[in-house]
Image 1: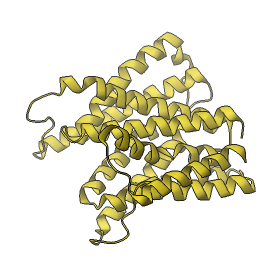
Image 2: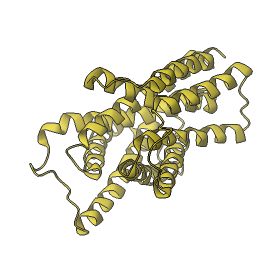
Image 3: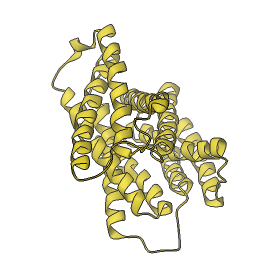
Image 4: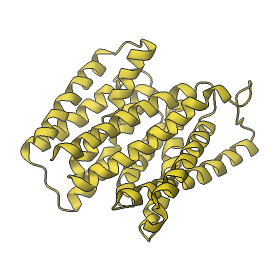
Length: 288
């Protein structure tokens, strides 16, 4: 695999990891649905300006339905993941959620991609490292079947978004338009879910009111997520999907390291081992 696609895929994992870290912090004070809707709305405004400036509207075509589908699947996956985390235990939910990489890898294999021996070894090592970096809980309280179901649903959804957005455009300007359409769909779907949630008695805002001071952080989360989708699409279009997907799925390692760096959270032994394996797998994929 050429270096640029690998770098784009690694940039995806960095951006998603930081976005997940920021989103996790924000949802401690603000309802998750509100975080999703506000952060994606900010992304819509920025992307709308980019599309107008680059003339992206000229790239409109039937392929944008892939972006619409990604925009519908994304919020369902995110909400399923948040609900699974609430049911816990997180030590089981988080690693299972990373298994969504199987979807784009499977798509690549169906389309005829066949990784070399080193790349195949890299896939196995990297995915194992990602799962371990999530700190899997190997003993303790039993896991509810609903939590497992929701986690697997979220994983399939995350993987599907990766596959769909990579099919939504073939040019850079077309990618801006596809990401804009995806985000508009995200906001509409998320907004509808938030409306229904409020009608059922849930709260949309924290007790202190709208989190104006958190707007920069919300903007970062939304834009980092958008940028991650964009870099993954470029990586998948210019290199093997099987490799790009695995490299992009290293984001749980980034989230764990961010928690260690910014919150001084200690990495468990299994997480440190997972981060190391993920690095080894990355090197195998990049050089295979």
